[in-house]
Image 1 (cartoon, rainbow, N blue to C red):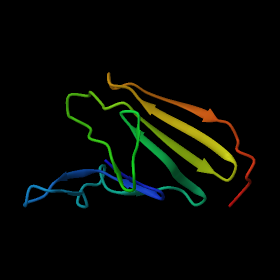
Image 2 (image 1 turned 180 degrees about the horizontal axis):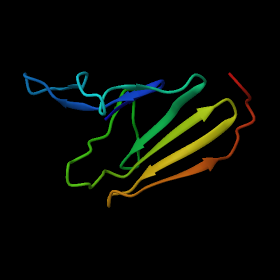
Image 3 (image 1 turned 30 degrees about the vertical axis):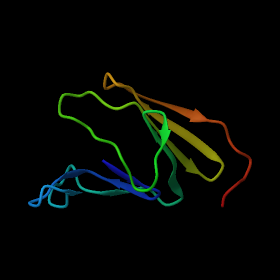
Image 4 (image 1 turned 180 degrees about the vertical axis):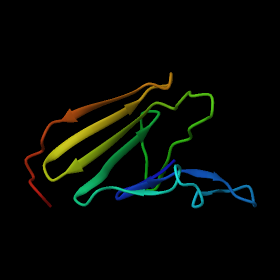
Length: 100
């Protein structure tokens, strides 16, 4: 899965053996976040990830531990993935910056 500030794509190996966005799959196609919502932070295995951040989702269900921070105006949410495949979300503290 590739994450950018405005959405995400599911990746698969292309004919050259490189990761590429899945474009011909109705379920695993790319998604844009709703207007005003953005991904503002990603960490994988405890380290900050750049953009695009790539999280490998093996078919066995295990995950690298990750955290995705989402923002909409002053509202914040956090999605956390655990190595055992579990996901949890929590509302984060408002940062007081308002809508930017």
